[in-house]
Length: 322
Ligand code: ADP
Ligand code: MG
Ligand code: MG
Image 1 (cartoon, rainbow, N blue to C red):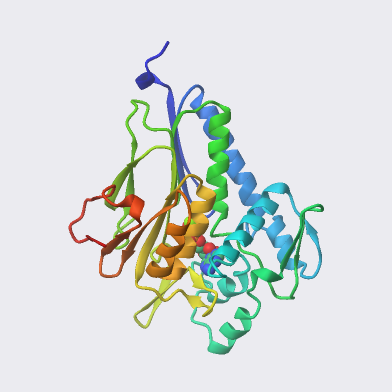
Image 2: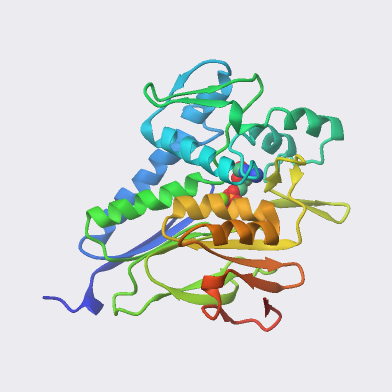
């Protein structure tokens, strides 16, 4: 019997799902487990990418008015996204595609659109016009010009699927980071919790401003620093408020959700970023087993009840309030 500290380990980083994915896995044949996990993520990307012409999402978006048959992964993610649209009263909306492509943030076509263009695209964003048929596994967009974008939730689904593969191979300790979507399995092999760092929103990737200890959790951050462009001193970031049709006007730099499943954490981090501190906290406190950490432009840290005293602030520019 091996000491747990001597468990074989493997790690890998790769560019996937439009971001840097890295993972460290402890257990038997960790390289094989990692390969299977990356293979699964590629599969999910191929199904749900909004730009790959072979994806189900591309097919749905190019055939408005027609029922498009999709695989069970895509169906599950669209259904979950609609559930979050319902519980956030449309602040989260998977039919956001017309606005995302109009602004083009993160692409070479990024620009500030005219008011009239925003109004026109906004009329096409309405999750209630996505119709699902559970029996047939079909999806219909009920207005021409509509489009689905799962960018705010697909990585969360992928992280949970990676964890399912780990469990199948009886991996008890792992750390996964899908470009800001962190998932930890168990604790470290020595039995201590994982230490998860929170990105300093002002600094280069990897600069950490706070940390906390966790086992078996998903930790997902949405921030205004991930993808954005600047014009005339204004920062236009990639999280759109469906009610205004423009990047969410907020005093937030980032919102981090901690809960059991990455699927929920990903949808909720985007949601509360749009909703802001007051409504975001209210939503999080109404849900079981969900916690949130906000950072605002005054570098204040706002925590939900269950996180109080759990966060270690590492950079004294940041102040815990409330
Ligand atoms: P990241 O992609 O950086 O991890 P998020 O998970 O917050 O960040 O997702 C942001 C992406 O989700 C955007 O790039 C866009 O594709 C999509 N999106 C933007 N605004 C919304 C919204 N209000 N509801 C749902 N999806 C959105
Ligand atoms: Mg998200
Ligand atoms: Mg995300």
